[in-house]
Amino acid sequence: MAEAHYHSLTFDASRCTACLACLRGCPTQAVRVTGGRARMLDDRCIDCGACITLCAEGAVRPLTSSLAELTQFDYTIAIPSPALYTQFESDVSPGVIHAALRRCGFDDVASLSWSCGAVTHAIEFVLAERRNGYPWISGFCPTVVRLIQVNYPDLIDHILPVVAPREVAAREAKRKVMAKTRLAADRIGAVYVTPCSAKMVSIIDHPGLDRSHIDSVVSIRDLYHLLKPAIREAADDGIVRSEPETAAGMSWAFSTDLPSSLPAEDTLSVAGLPNVVRMLDDIEKGKLGKYALIECHACPEGCVSGALTIENQYVARARAIRLRHSLREDAPIDRADLLKRHQAGEFLLTRPIGAWPGAAPDRDLAGAITRMKQRERIRAYLPGIDCGACGAPTCDAFAEDVASEQAEEQACIFVRQRQIEGIVKHLAHLVSPGGAVTDSPQTAAGCGQPDSLPAASCAVPAAKGHQ
Amino acid sequence: MAGQEIRRSYVIHGGDFANGGRASTALKDLLKVLAVPADVMRRVAIASYEAEMNVVMYATRGTMNAAISPASVSVTVEDEGPGIPDIGLAMQEGWSTATHEMREMGFGAGMGLPNMRRNSDQFEISSEVGHGTRVWIRVAVPER
Image (cartoon, rainbow over all chains, first blue to last red; front, side, top):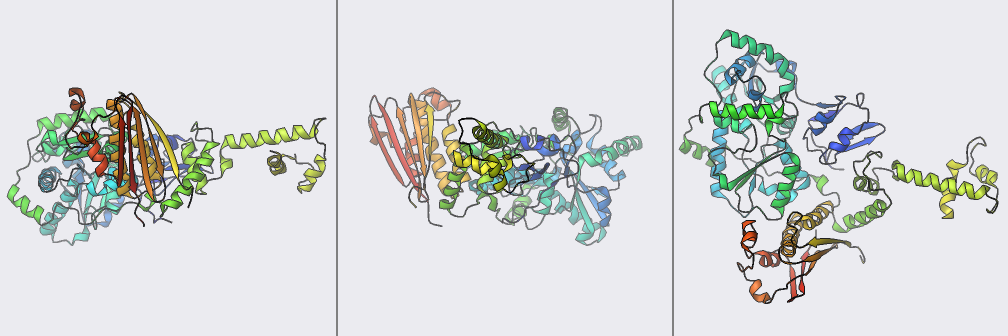
């Protein structure tokens, strides 16, 4: 049994109607429906949040924190994803949103702009140091990292070993607050305001880091109704400090645009899980070796379209582009100092990222081949229409489930129907004048069934025996 | 274990750039399900893709046949096409007969055949001008 992985969402059985929406829409086939309830396969789910969006019953819940949970800290710092700035009317500036976050109870608000700029430089340092015929794949989207851990174990070594701007921002903000307040590190809560549940994954179980610098994650969706009135009040107050966000910071909120200081001909940006999958497939074939860096977002428009955002994703994207034009350029950065810090490892991941054992269920190839043959035998008598009625997303997945004894073949309604047809044929054979008339009552009695029951339930083995 | 082998056959259409690469992707996905070691998978993926794209670029039609056993993965790509007059020349890095259009699409760097050889443990190529070309590669699976 593979060790359990942390997941940032949970299925609420009491709300699930087994409608199969999540089963059909899950990009990694990580949902099964058994006993009328959907459940997640621990070693296949990559926390993309597609099921959260697809479930009309609200049965898939993100496991982000509530504001009430933040009382455990003496001092809280909100660290907004740049996506937050795209969720309100265009005249609401990042500065107003920061003021509104303070009104909602945060003691401090830290912008990602400095760390986005710093991380961009760190990426340049890494790109200058190491090229090996493969592009680096950005690992800032936790879902993309999980996708690679589950389905692309051979590409793990090509995940860019640079720490995400949100982590750098949390570390720097906590340092500042510790110096200012003299509080111990564990009394200060760095709270990421997130557009998706996947960021929970990176604080509980951060691949490549011993531990995350972020202590808690609150979703834009949960904060939205508090921020709306707080923004009105903050705007009325008129006390907005200088704009905290910069153009560079906004670039990180959406796809199709890279950190502006990287040479465009060396980098590609891809968004949306199916597109990321195609990109990773091409990288595996050795097709994209001339690129230095490929930036991957699991969500279709990047972070502005995360499952826990409120605003229409295209409206949000348009606002991000507008904001990037109107905000000032990068926060001032001392590149020489940054290089020193980079060389000291401040912006680098500290541990190797591991593949998931689920990606390799059989330790030896001979066992895997035997199981594949078994799976092919089962697959041959399935209808191939991927109806989902068995509770697996495709006939292939169902064949695999049966081969690995996770499901029974009778869960397929077509297999059952064929068995019933066999029984009917057998019964017809028994009663027809030309049939070998043996004594169906005796057969039934021989099965030990009460006389009142139809013989069908015990005729299955007999029917098989005739074929 | 005799007979413990998975076989797959894929059809490749010459000139079909839109679908070029599907056969090697399908083979790669199968190797992943079988949890073939990552390095073996990677080498087969690169070599089979190069072989597939050679059919797409130069031949009329072809087939890719793969066999996966506990000891190795072997891939045979055969095509009906113009054939290669001088294999020794074609095996040289940087030698290519790709058209300008192919080069614009990122192919034709003259690395296809050398890449296949580099990414396999055994490599065989035979060709008959006017009839077609056959490439066979084998990647050994190291003992675990």
